[in-house]
Image (cartoon, rainbow, N blue to C red; front, top):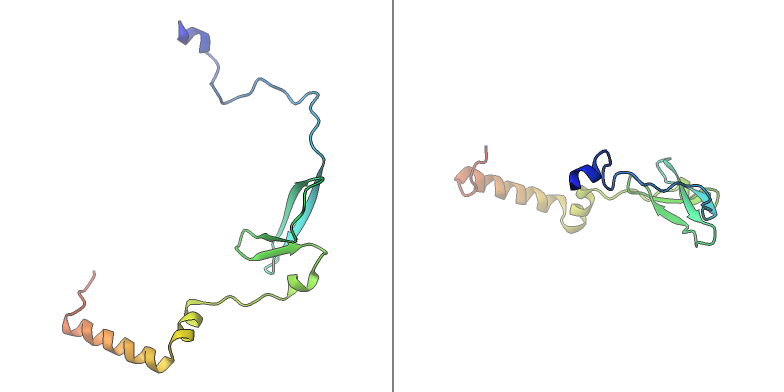
Length: 114
């Protein structure tokens, strides 16, 4: 009996309500631009506080379009793993460490992973 009453309707997949006589909230579209040139447009409610910065899809910090053009042009260079490593050790220390690890590998202290 339950099978007959639900036949032809996928539960939860479709709404029986319509958008007639529905007033949507007023919105403002705000554009953000990241240093890589990506432009993102986001809708905000009319009375909402709009942030000056937004995280771009590439991970960089995007600024509101037209608000801060200098921040859009000047980007802080990304620190690489190598840069962070050089903050902790000098190149001579790294060469000595590499040679020590290679010698351990040759002597059989570090197993071969194939």
